[in-house]
Image 1 (tube, rainbow, N blue to C red):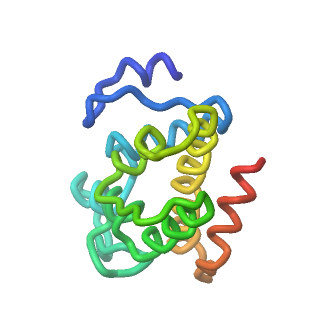
Image 2 (spheres, helix red, strand yellow):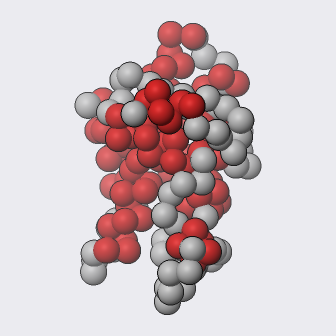
Length: 157
């Protein structure tokens, strides 16, 4: 599957960042997010699927796109702030998904720590998507305070 995905074209003209420290399903989700192949409400609506709304189920502030869910949604903004604080990075702002996914290359850290930071970034994307799915498909909204704990636990595992 990795070879097939690597040969497919990317919207950002970049190779997928496969990290052997995370499960394949997390790497594939990250690839899908990067290539706008995630079933967001915006994409489903564009494909002709009738939805009640295309707005973000987490904040209802904007249309649900990959950039909104993982970068611009207040939940994502707060989550990334906590992640950067955990890694002791200050003054970082994200403008788009590519910035987040390639952040390990730009931040001042030892080369040996970059693969671990990529694990945290991929895991954060996974956790935000799972939080979004729990919000959409469960009657009870999950608490956002537990999102960072999920990221930490999943990253360590």
